[in-house]
Length: 146
Image (cartoon, rainbow, N blue to C red; front, side, top):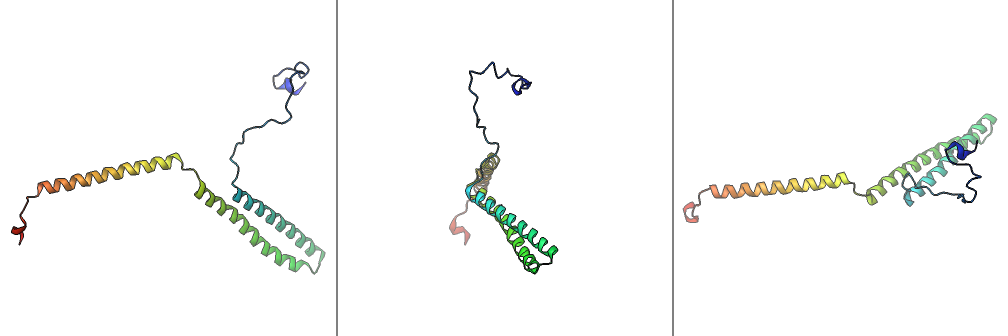
């Protein structure tokens, strides 16, 4: 049974006149990472892989009883710190990028509009209250106050 037959299509021999494409573009499911974030991620992967290689060399040197074992373990600890820093750099770079270049989402802009409307209503209520307070107070002359 042919692959096309399993999918419910016709046999390939019957549609020999229709050329099949070797590569079919499909839309991406996720957006592409921003350039600074991608750069930080590549850097973090390279540093993490070098740290793992260094850890394996330190382990093998320890098993072999080589003099290089102790310096490799010390540098392995240092490179673990650097690898952790690199991964945190990816996270911070991503957060900064989203904060600076992110799209304003609909819910937040809707909330902003609601806050504006509430503020406008409060101002109008205070203005009406002040106006009502002025009209209810009896007017006195300036000379009568002294």
